[in-house]
Length: 69
Image (cartoon, rainbow, N blue to C red; front, side):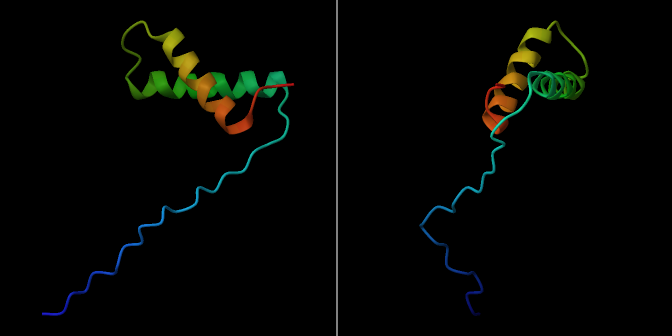
């Protein structure tokens, strides 16, 4: 039987990123708040992890958009 697998490139795919050059402090806070809520929702709002949720969300937003000016 024929080998139907395609050869796999050993060259890593380029990561496509787009960044916003500036974000207002208000928009940053809103995005962090929304992401923190989603983190809490995903774990069923169990435990006392509000600070962890906020810091995790803050890290993600800052990686995507950079720090607010």
